[in-house]
Amino acid sequence: MARQVRAWIQRWEPDLMEAIKWHMLCFSGRKLVCGLSACKKHLGITFFRGTELRDMANRTQASSRFV
Image: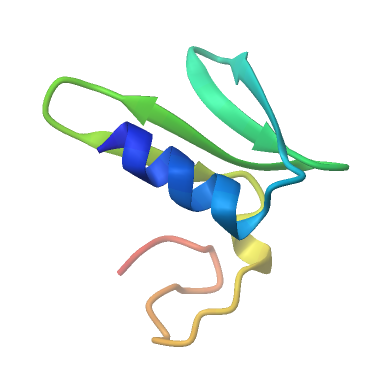
């Protein structure tokens, strides 16, 4: 699953650079964009600038916590 998500990110924005930071694969341009952490039974995706993402389904609160 991690390989598939990595491929999607690379297709979505091929100019992003990859680096291992904080024990996860991080993607960055001028700023950090997202990170992937693969575990045995799940995949974690971190959006470093998540509060800047549009919330089209209105699922986040002002504190940017998922409801």
